[in-house]
Length: 360
Image (tube, rainbow, N blue to C red; front, side, top):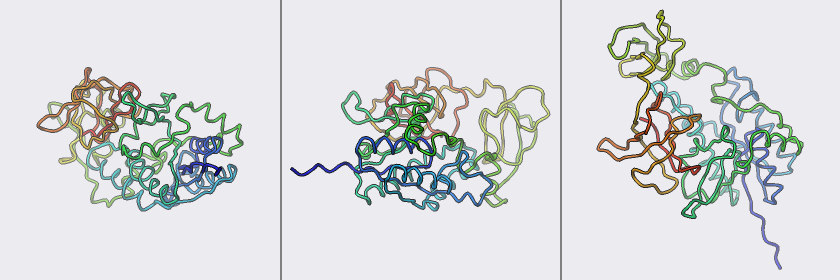
């Protein structure tokens, strides 16, 4: 009797402990594993220290290769710098200049990890693509494949996966979604992986510890950077001047550059006239938001009660999605603080990832 062929899996290896343990677990489970790292950013162009909170730098590539050697699996390095700049960095800069606060990790997942690497998976005749995301695959109430949250609520990364296409769900594996971070590190140590104690990537990998505004200023022509006025909301009193709307985020209360004793917050940004509005914290709360480009990973009913996260570490709040003449609107049971254009609103049904879209 002919021996059944083992399933082949392409593992996205960033050089960190999560994806390294993901690859190791799949080897243990008998899969034919191939490792691949995307080189997305030339860290020699900036002053970010490689391997310390970065992702996919030359040091990270070397770490991933070391793990692949330890696991005795084939390993590829894929140069994605051009795609990363056009699909992640350029939209990041454009969004900030437009007075929004972007989520570049979503674009990285959408256009590189689960687009570019899916193509590579098919090219290498693999059955699955696996990543080190803290997420899980499960069957929902309708007995169809679904993504649900990790058992580690703090590390859960499903917020960044709402743009995935339904048709690729049966090709995805998240090997560490049932583990917490401590368990992942203990497994890495037990398996002798060199990255067991490596620092996690934090923040936005291509920005590093620098101020976002500094990164943006390095990426654009100075003529695109315009100053303007800081005004008191809602009356319009001039409170000061600024050198760029992109330097402010909604809800910010520090570093406003105003000699004013009352604690004020950024409550609105108007890039069309370079105005930043500041006011009392109560002006940050809203009960609804407009949303665009919704992607559904499962079916839904209009008016259905969903748990909605409006930023990564938001716990989520009950809301209902409604169609209006102006488009799709999310209405919350309770007012939400600092609903920020450019961020994602991501929907859950219990622990199941239902879909999401972009806050206008």
